[in-house]
Length: 136
Image (cartoon, rainbow, N blue to C red; front, top):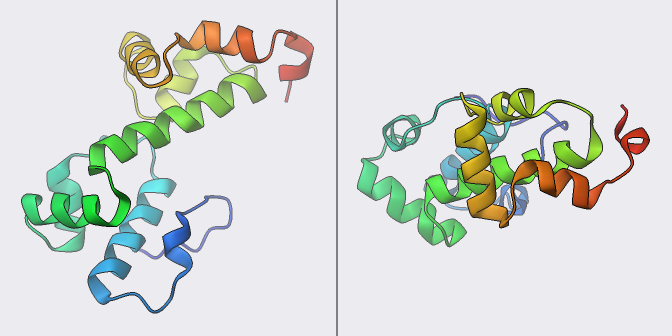
């Protein structure tokens, strides 16, 4: 796992605190890594292995640090990025779904609706009704 050095990806604010205990720094590095590989099909086992913890210890430490389980964090991050893409670009729904780690548009739409309370197409039209302003 490499350190998050890219300025293109925003890492959680906790990453900026340099005097954290080693276990916390390792989790922060993992978060940065997650942010750079958002579309990867992550599992709890993969994530725990990256930081050298058992699955249960990883879930406990992650949840203590961020007040939510890892997969909840990942889903919310993906949906936040998808929502931003929906209103700032004209990229089609299947492409946005793939960019945030979903193999099918249907699975993406269900997850998006569950997290944001509205389907992605409606979210796009409600938040940016002018197609001209989505170009870019």
